[in-house]
Image (cartoon, rainbow, N blue to C red; front, side):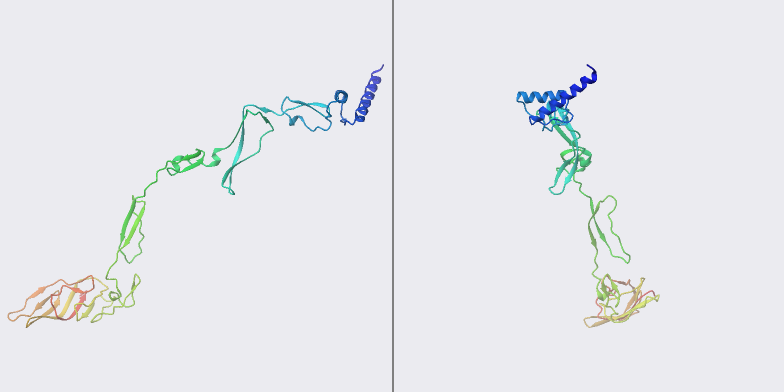
Length: 312
């Protein structure tokens, strides 16, 4: 018998086997070979289970495990883990419920035994780089340093400075001196003389508009080298624009019992009248007091008619 004749007989036997199996209501795979056909026939004759509708593949079963699918023996190839397995995930903050969510995909299909351990982690650097020394003492945080670590940073107490400022014509910026962290308070000095009556009419100083136009006389001009005020009251308020030696000229009088003493002012002093002899000059230093009045006059004057000058 030739080889071709034998091949033809085998092919005919396979075709007959497929027909017989199909007649039993069993689906025969298109690529069924003699071995798989024999298995199907064995199942039919022995009352076995029809596996023609099974869908399992080797990648669905544990490594080394076998099963029959569509009349063929299939050996699983999915790795089985019996110890520890690690998966790297990404940390994502979920605003909707204020929770840290670990998100990622399993790298490869595998089967875990009941006694195995699955470990999933995220890169600690993604949680931040704060350390205990960076966080206030007693407060907890989570970062690369660990989970819910307690801060150790001591609260620092700033060194503050209190300052007093005297207003001036120029704008001032108040800052702490070297060695201080800041200012605890800034006190701006006041002056009781900052009232409208002490300020020339039409002039505003720190928001106070002046009303003074001269008491008992008229003031000098800032364009002149000499300024003068004519006063008839010791309480008159003087407001010189310039500075210099204050001199007083004119007359004044003082009553004591039945005696009236007349004073003649000559700039830097005065003469007092006498009942006999020649009056002598008394030197005096005149100045403008903090309230704007003239100081240095003899006490007790009841009447005056004076010219007060600066720059003469």
